[in-house]
Image 1 (cartoon, helix red, strand yellow):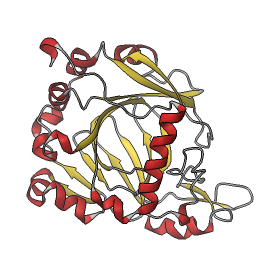
Image 2 (cartoon, rainbow, N blue to C red; image 1 turned 180 degrees about the vertical axis):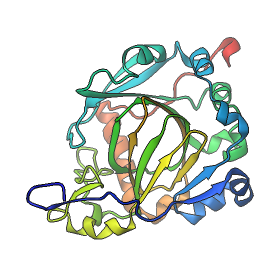
Image 3 (cartoon, rainbow, N blue to C red; image 1 turned 120 degrees about the vertical axis):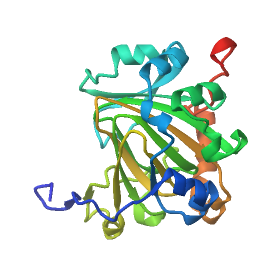
Image 4 (cartoon, rainbow, N blue to C red; image 1 turned 135 degrees about the vertical axis):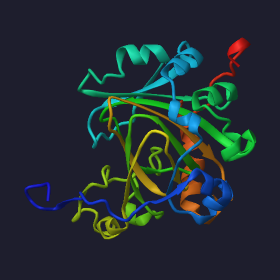
Length: 293
């Protein structure tokens, strides 16, 4: 127990195992087969080129590109939305990647879906071998963060394939549901987030239904060269473990969302809310021009 009144259950065990398959098994099973199975899985032994991720290539392809910087207090229970600004990617490495500002978390995101040559250069292989034609994707996001950066518990309305390129990330996963997770205010655009910000430290008296779900918790630490498939509607949180953590994730639409009306409803409302309030919505970066593309 982590609180003096013993109402908060700290979860330290690994929980249920996350299945692991090789890239060859993933290719044989097929992307759609993995999506239909609807459970998280780690795919390892990705194409050999992924193991040789190069910061030089990243800097060459995107160093001067303007990306979105997310900043928020280094507080797992922060109730406010993050602040965003636009900076060159190299500026993030120079100013924020070391996490020198202990009072804040900084991470960048860039939806590089419209820059397929850059995506392929950074990954080291053509992602169409994994995911099919680009028209099926909603976003291809580059994420860069420093140690301890934390993403509060939430679900995505999209199928998520997350490739770890550098550093390690710890994911806590729980199966779909709505009422048991005590969602925050839908009206404020937080319908995809839980009032219990951290699934490893849950107030069992305040959130008894969630406490009953915790035995179904899964935990995985994603290593460089591994990919996590995270089905839409699955609750999750993530923590960056190393000084520098770099991921590329592919978000893809799937008709499975029709079987989870609360996910669809939250997605539609949140998209409208973000547009109305001018909140960042992961829009694609402009396509590259010239030789870089």
